[in-house]
Length: 100
Image 1 (cartoon, rainbow, N blue to C red):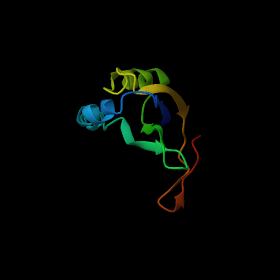
Image 2 (cartoon, rainbow, N blue to C red):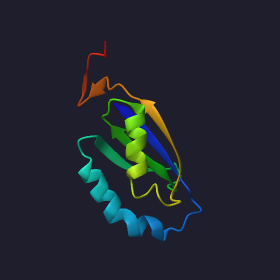
Image 3 (cartoon, helix red, strand yellow):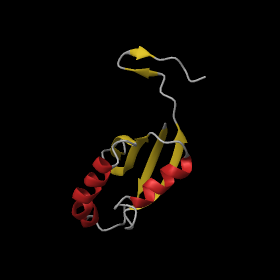
Image 4 (cartoon, rainbow, N blue to C red):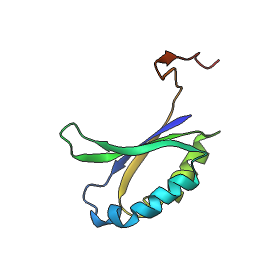
């Protein structure tokens, strides 16, 4: 599993997000077998920051290819992204065995 942290370009036209949101959500739904969770991130003061995806994939390269197919990526809405390997060890009130 991978965690992807997106940083948005706060100088981008705010209408970009609104106009592409239906296409972006359709993209996430079409890739629900990989993108297990997604949502926006905000600063503590409530201002926008970017987004977070949890992605099931075999490789970081596959995650990167998926990111670049997202309608948000082709615009200047996203400033950057970072991909992290993520191992879930706690969910639904219970710990899980760490990966071997």
